[in-house]
Length: 178
Image: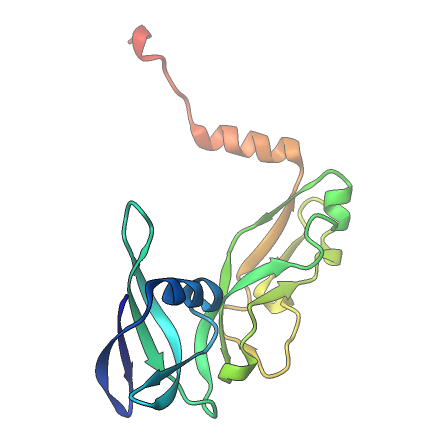
């Protein structure tokens, strides 16, 4: 798999990696975990900035790697999860918990980057309850950069959710009647 490695104090370098190894690293590290590579005998700490996939087979065609320094903070996106998902008080009461965003922007040193951040599921009790980015559980060394007021998760009554979905669908007419 061809790749490009670039950074602020280095010239962009074209490299290649074994397809199986590159795919495994890409699937494991994603865009939020540092990857150590060796170029010309010199180790470099990098992060995957983009991955190009073959459209039909979804196999890896190209990677872009950005060189980072272990002593400098990096900004990246990580997933947001509901702590104890499936076991929240709202879900136990038969309510529906919907996540409105999948990821947030964070800043941290490469060694401190988490796989995901969490919001406390125990605060989701009744319909209308919601959590925002400001409710994300703190992680030492990690700063959340996304808008603090952005809603992450909301609790709905199943019947209200069905009614909202139906209303969003609009009025349909049978073409055979037209």
